[in-house]
Length: 135
Image 1 (cartoon, rainbow, N blue to C red):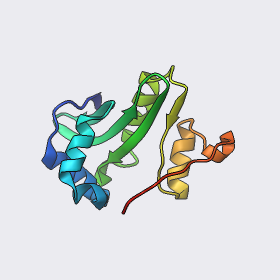
Image 2 (cartoon, rainbow, N blue to C red):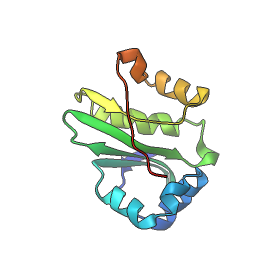
Image 3 (cartoon, rainbow, N blue to C red):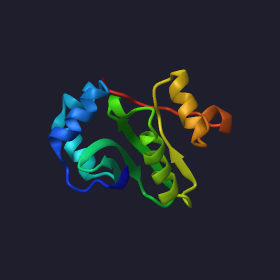
Image 4 (cartoon, rainbow, N blue to C red):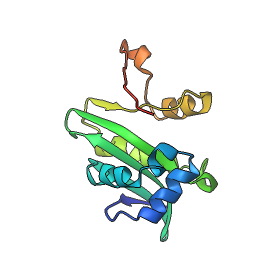
């Protein structure tokens, strides 16, 4: 597996990846997703040869805050270290940034994964998060 910057947007691959995760809020608006990729701080992809395994996409200023917007791995490649490699690459790239944040589904497996990567829940840090989410 190789982790490298995702520079050339391949809409078919990306829509397939997001659909495989059931993220229809993205696949229903492909133009917005394309703009989101274009405006991202950094997007990394995991490849096996030419096959896309997953991506991690970040937004922010890269100096004081980085927000992990999306991290997705194709279902057939989950549990094989792809997500860990992608997230680890972001954490390494931005090791001097004070705040690296993300929001995610509230499931025991998801929480365990992020804790295993050294992240803490906001409540453990004395923080409270807010969001406005249009469905």
